Image (cartoon, one colour):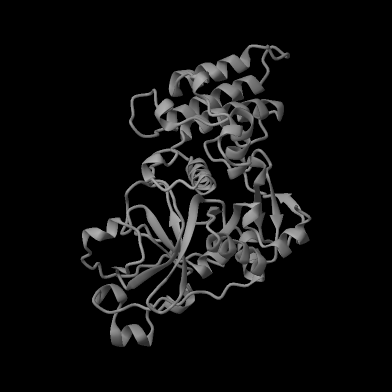
Length: 390
């Protein structure tokens, strides 16, 4: 399946200041009008800026919502706000150790997986943003290109083992680099796992592919899954049923998937565009009505692909579905035609028509979701039974 460049002219409508507030009132942008069906609490939108740490921002946002639900927090001023860079720092150190043990046969970069956040939380605890910014290098938002390069250069030098025997002090060098760029960890400020009000063992990964047996767990074969965190494999209809059941029962979902599609706009919309249907260059349609961009006032109906289990697998095998991005799914909505969408919290700051939130079509989610993490209590009991999870 090839990816095509697609230009769709959209009409930007004036919207009131109420757009900044999510809620049941319909909001309009371009040719879409959305009405919220179900919306679960989420914390404010953050900005990962120039760092490959979407996995951490989305998974921590997910855990914050879990705590809000578990503790019944109603006042948004009391919502938890955990430090992403604390988790990133812990993950960097663990990955450096594993990188050397595997003689450099591991991805040593900023990208990671939801399992990294869960493992850090279980092993080290978490820390509030107010106690650890992780930004000691002169920026007010994450800018980690230099840090990533320095860390990789250091561990690559260690892997070469120039003494033919590794010293016991090289891990201190990793911590020295992290202290310099991110700051020393104030150990007394660590929030212990048992004080979070949630059980970190309740969270499990799920996916839906046919190259492994259904109802078994396997480590997703993507380079950012360096901890080899497992995901349980479900048929597509059951996979989507988990997402819907979670949202309907007040839970949210950590979402990982592909956002390189032409239908994933930078203005808050994610649709699975049928590029064959829209490839009208030189067609009779174009002859009579012109190109879409020539008539921005006309309404555009975008046809979406119909997603099957086979199409999902084809996209994964052909690498037209890749591990691009992590976000936080927290609700559902419908467009003006009754089509279903999911409410998605991104980590690109206050951007787009919905101030950092996205509307993702059901078809896009079916095709482009690589894996999710949910509370096991959000999974329908018949599916839990098939997985053998109590």
